[in-house]
Length: 57
Image (cartoon, rainbow, N blue to C red):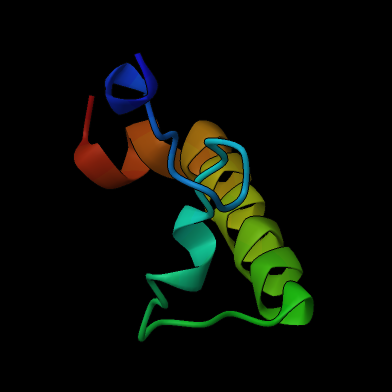
């Protein structure tokens, strides 16, 4: 009966930490994201206001 003993792998209790294995080559600072959002908002407001005149509709 001692030979039928099941051995469980030891470690982190089945938890997998994927962020330790992968690191992106592209990294943004929070300030860059805020500036990008503001630029997109300004472009959208400009197109909403003057887009019909630019396209000619």
